[in-house]
Amino acid sequence: EAGVTQSPTHLIKTRGQQATLRCSPISGHTSVYWYQQALGLGLQFLLWYDEGEERNRGNFPPRFSGRQFPNYSSELNVNALELEDSALYLCASSLYGGGGNTIYFGEGSWLTVV
Amino acid sequence: KQEVTQIPAALSVPEGENLVLNCSFTDSAIYNLQWFRQDPGKGLTSLLLIQSSQREQTSGRLNASLDKSSGRSTLYIAASQPGDSATYLCAVLNAGNNRKLIWGLGTSLAVNP
Image 1 (cartoon, helix red, strand yellow):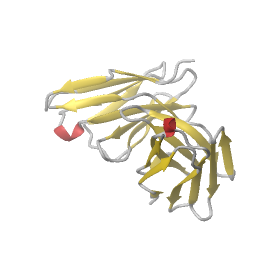
Image 2 (image 1 turned 45 degrees about the vertical axis):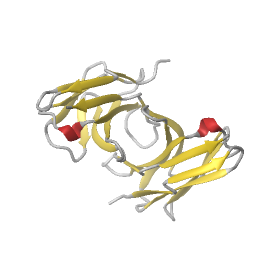
Image 3 (image 1 turned 60 degrees about the horizontal axis):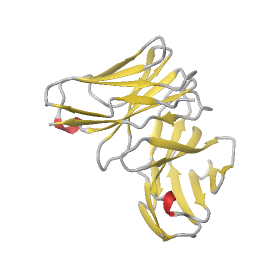
Image 4 (image 1 turned 90 degrees about the vertical axis):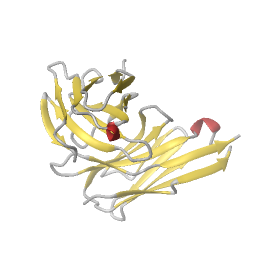
């Protein structure tokens, strides 16, 4: 069974541009989470989607946004890129994001802003 | 506000040793606690998930315990191998409507041949 898949693996953008990252959850999972891990820092929660709706978001500015499609895949968009947005962006999925479900992570997308 | 702390930040051991990684959290109102492994430059692998009603979970050479009342969890790795070298992260899922995973900063483990 395929795990959580993310694309692209690496992305290089210029300051001020927009970046779009994609995630396909494990089949049957309805919840998708996005996390940012900047070098040397812990994982920071970005967004949680379930059944197509944004359920929760972390302490990030509005230029970080996303959506979940009817097939439960998800996109993370980062507008007006800043140098400090350079990080590993991890997507995870689970059955509905309630308490009992293991969360599975993808390999991540490396975003470099120059 | 939930905070998760992992001790030690880094650990270097010779191959074959049994070792314990510690995770503590400040708010006992959790749904579960999960241990992950992160290899350099890669995503996370889920190792063990312990529900709030459980005391421990085992998978192969790994055993994780949970003491919710004291806000502590330990990950025990038996007979460590060089392939166990990675960063180990613990995360708690808060109870209530929050549904956020709160992460520790991890323990960087090096197992030397």
